Image (cartoon, rainbow, N blue to C red; front, side):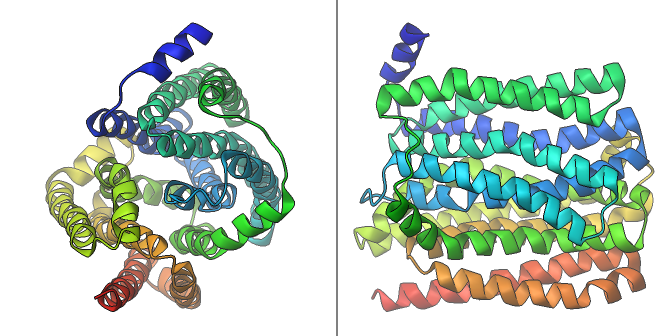
Length: 416
């Protein structure tokens, strides 16, 4: 393993290589969520797929606790305010909070015992992604982003096929994701950790003053991210409370394509984030604006393509691959795709505000949007069903997008 690790570390890198491998890794991560939902639907049926969908949504919300939005801060930490041991050690704390939060959240929303247990297991499964993310940020900081991409590809697809194999063998979600978690954890210990040790010290050491500062710096960003996913989950929780598990399964399927825009935007935009941070810190306003403009134009073009594809092929394709009759959900799908485009823009503007170190503004925007959708949730979902749920999501994305755009324009103007 040492010789193999040395060979990987010594390979020449380039922006093209980093982009290609990180694109492959990001695509694998995004596809996993979609394909595993489809696999559960196909193998276990609509009812169990609905149970899985709400537990998966809750676990994804808790995953934001595990991440604590440190990746953006870690990559943009060009002045090395914190070293890797601080970022790595913080994940022990955030993962503990993530697991406890999974129980609390599921209990507060009145999930059944089955859903509570599955939510906790999926939170355990996602701790591997949390640690993978901090190693990915480390490799990017060391200009070795391609290593993170390679790790993501192998780890994600290996765990996917293991989970599907167990589902086919025994039809048990608990057994399947327990096996998947084991595979992911072993890969991290056998690949990411040895490679990172070749580049720097990999050590869990709680320097409490550094931890306090790190959590303080990232808290506004984390709370914003948590609230954004909370906002996305409001409709799903409303369906869980007022509709059925079968409807939840259908909503989960038509929601999938809305993530395609953000997935493809990550491929192009994430490798450029470091350049955006450097341009801002060097006060190179022209280069900063050019990078932001190019990323936003890419999102607009991608959204147009996805909307056209969704209108022409979305429902037939989704019905075919899921085995569910989704013909009545075409309008809902188009609303979700439009919201997905706004979400892609939000992610870019979010990073822009982070680079400017104005994270507290993000918090205020998300709090306002979260309060708005929570107040409207019951009325819209009980009154209009799935169309009410998707309209609520679109409204939230529009409010956040407009607010972030105004913030970015204001602070860029101040730099003149």
